[in-house]
Image 1 (cartoon, rainbow, N blue to C red):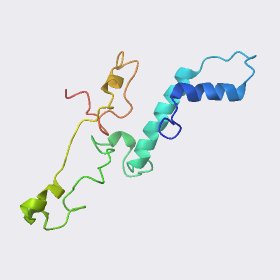
Image 2: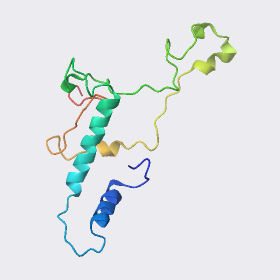
Image 3: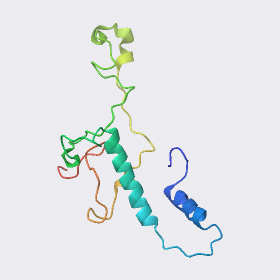
Image 4: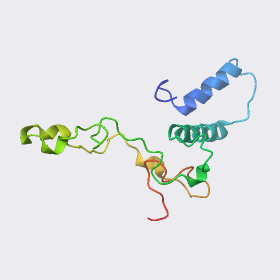
Amino acid sequence: MTLVGKISTYDYYRGLEKLTNNAGNLAFKKQYDSFCRAVREWQHLKSLKRGGRGNDASRPVDQTTDGELAVLCPACPHPGVNLPSNWQSVNLKKRFIYNLFLAVDACFRLKQKLVSSKATDPGLGTGWSYMVPDEPY
C-alpha cells in the first residue's frame, strides 16, 4: 500500500470512507484501529507465505524458528550460492568484488518498535524475520 500507492494507511482508510459515502451525510463508526490491525495481520500472513510457511503440513506456524522468514539479500555475496568456486584465490586487486558491505539505512525506523506494552501490542512473529526475539535480551 505505502510502497506502490505512495499513500499512508490513514489516507487509504479515508479513501475507503469516501468511496462508501462521498457526500458525508452518513455517520460511520470509526474502524481505523480495526483496519490497522487487519493490515498488520495481512502483512504477517504474507511474510509467512513468502517464507514458505503458509501451507506447510509437516509443522505448524508456531514452530517457525528465529530468522526463518528473513530473505537473504540476492546482491550480497554468499559462498556456494552466487560466488565462483575460486573466489578466495582471486588476485588481490580484484578481491574487492567479493566484499560484503554492511550499513545502517538512514530511513530505518526503530521508533516504530516502541510500543506501550507487550500486552496491548504483541508481536505477531517476533524473531522470525529481521528483529531479534525479546526474551533473550
